[in-house]
Amino acid sequence: MVGLFEHADGHKQAIHPMPILFLQSKIWRDALVALTLLLASGLAAAQHCATTIESDDALRFTPEKIEIPLSCKTFTVTLKHTGRLPKLAMGHNWVLAKLSDLDGVARTGMLAGADHNYVDLKDTRVLAHTSVVGGGESASVTFDVATLLPGERYGFVCTFAGHSPLMRGTNVLK
Ligand SMILES: [Cu+2]
Image (cartoon, rainbow, N blue to C red):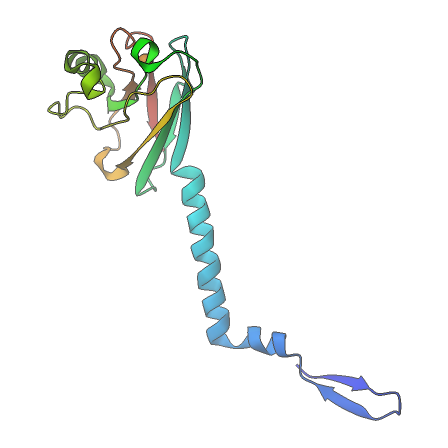
């Protein structure tokens, strides 16, 4: 692509628009496309392969449903405690297990006690868990999505002593 520039004295001069030539070079164009795709997939991962769930002083998880895309390699859950009570009185954790295992992991977690974040590490039914957080605190956990079986039903629960009947929700695999 060559343009013509006309000088004041009437003589014409060819102009080579360098930026366009630069972009027209196949190597650079391929590199640019690759970079754009990389940035886009990074953004998609940030948007879809992580979520934040809130808990408060009223024994509530918000939302009570988390969607986990099977296309994600890993998924990160950040548990935020928006309440004001300290973790000894109103601590919360987020424990992932099969829906049918929630009561079981709540039981072993309660027995493990506060010193172990109310999680029994020997209980293989626990698929992922955060530490216990108090008001104003937050904690995250990242797990491999490949550990979740399509077709199985999964849920989450807070295993802090006495919270599991109220604080629980479901994970939906997409
Ligand atoms: Cu709790």
